[in-house]
Amino acid sequence: MKTTKFLAATAVLAMSATMALADGPNIFVIGGKPDDPFWSRVKLGAEHAGLVAEMHGGSVTWLGPQNYDNLGPDAAELIRQAIDQGADAIVGPDWVPEAMDPAFEAVVAAGIPLVIYNAGGIEAADRLGAMNYVGAVDYKSGEAAGIYLAEAGHTNGACVNTLPGAANIEAFCSGFNDGMAASGGTGSVLQLPATAFGDSTAVAQAVRAHLLQNPDITALFAIGDQDTNASISGIQQAGKTGSVHVCGMNFNDSILANIQAGTQDCAIDQQGYQQGFFATAILINNVQYGTTIPTREILTGPGIIDASNVELVIAGVQAGAR
Image (cartoon, rainbow, N blue to C red; front, top):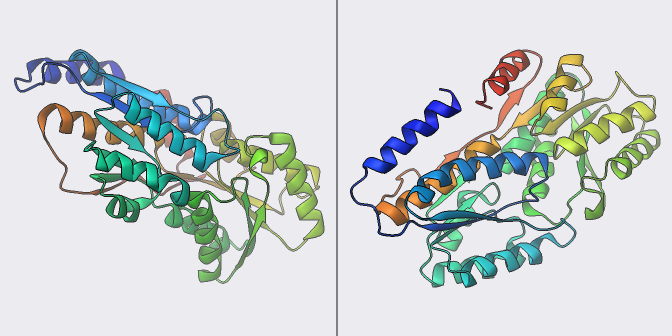
């Protein structure tokens, strides 16, 4: 279904509803930087779901950090800002539980409906008293990458971690290492400072140095689009193109082009648009109509994009569906 038809259908349903509140819900969504390639898709999904709220006089407000240098405390402050600004419901990822959980607990204590998405899993939703979890299971995403690469014969791998301390990223790397081990390989972690996240030059240089110091490594797993491209650059700089294979979290046009060209083996898809859309829609309908979703863990991944299905994914992107 094309986006225009989908939005038109949504508008009809919203306008025909007879049990709406006098004022629409004001939903606050905590997420990553809006210019982050992955989070821009999550934000778009939340905004599209928010069109229903806007038709009833409500809104969807996106709150994201300026950078990822102090991720947990900064995200906790954004959660508290949402409370102070009168949020009717809040969506948020549990990136750094020790820093963020007290703020989420304040959301629930204030009687504000909460959905955890993207990071934390159903365990975080249960622990915090949230309505639902929407997203992939981070450990399983990393595990899928480890299994894929090891089963392809690339049995010595490293997870490139540019956000140390973030629970979801640590889970990616833990899952990757276990996936490698389960398929007869060995996994390790190349840990960089958080300032390296999104810094293509810093990541490429670190990958180059690590590969030259560890010539037995034949596989890398990167935690996002930019880091994946930077890792490929680092492989090229180390003279390892064709001998070190790459899988990364998420995808964009350049990642799909990498897979087409054979410079990247796979991408792990967690469907960021779906995360933003479903998490926001659940809360809009709960506040507006009192509805709940019995399925409390709504999984959006992991899925694997590789040479076998990349053309289909590209067609989906061109149709506006991915």
